[in-house]
Length: 151
Image (cartoon, rainbow, N blue to C red; front, side, top):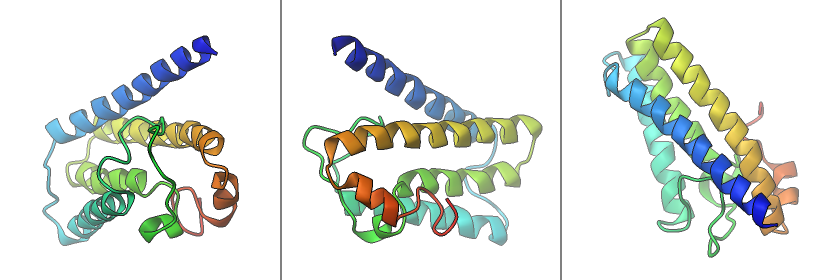
């Protein structure tokens, strides 16, 4: 059991590290705010979704690592009624317009690595949430992982 916990901690650290490296690269290699309206709107929508998800979850009831906190509670309110990972969607919605605004092969590759990392992190996190919350399995059957109606 101790080996499993140790491995999970390092997996969580690796996933979060990759996520932050990708976000740092995107932030440092281009603008932080899209100039064009058609890119600014989804960027701001992503920021709004992230803030909404944080407020619904409650400050202190989550952290960046996929491991659920001992005191955390499962919620089905706000954006969590439709999607299980609104904070991950917020990250992707906020960063993709920035990549497109100042497009380069390296920036789109880093964004793709970020997206793949978040998809893997979602699956890993869901396994942990299913073991912590008895109702999580049923919740997964009634909601989409990331994009309502699609995924």
